[in-house]
Length: 304
Image (cartoon, rainbow, N blue to C red; front, side, top):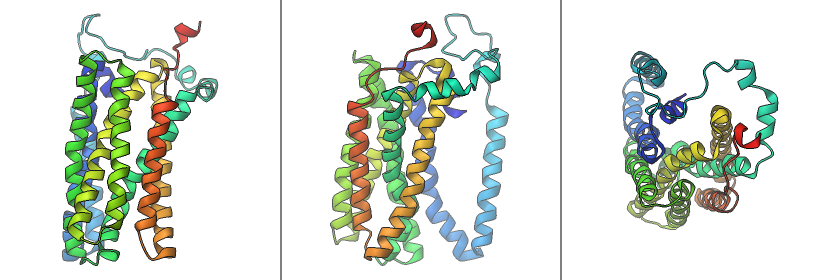
């Protein structure tokens, strides 16, 4: 819903920054959560922590529902209307299984799904395991780990904004829409993987936090560009299905990241192999975006 809303309200040359601001909440939340939740847990127990998070989620959903307006409800001229899907298309037609299966024929579709798998794999490794990594591997107290775990995610907030700004600037410089969005993705993934290796190997806690912050910054730079790329390569009439499948690939990557990281850490007694594996996943994702995601999927009109 959020991605479709951004596509409806913003043009391609402005969409990168809009997406980066909207999705930067994915970095702001993890930046605030570790110290705040640690404080709640140590002060009032884990039940109070869970109840507070649940109430906050319901409150934010209500704010979105109260404030958001669809552009189709406003008196825009034909020139002002953007790429809005046809709301009069029957739901059964929009959700046809044949239309979903048709996307499976395209390399671009698989490149986006599997690329997001690798991107989110490493990004979620840092979100789900960073507090535990600092406690177990770096021997920090729970309170100290809660504070330090928020630093990389706060740095990542600026990565989100940088990715959107860079992509929009490249579009305005004359590069194609596709290349302008792929450059921040690929550079971000390679830099993220490169910073992850020393983060896993250095002995200094300060250096480890520094390299992790660099990795999260560049990983965050890739994410808004990735979603802007979805709006370019997906046919407008299949944007919801395409973005859902891409998000599904990321969800699988994030889920496996949490499980595999824990398994490797338990079996080896170290997080270093798990971090290096995450770096390999990010490099693999960069290769997919560079060599598999090449051409937009044709629209219904183009195929007819």
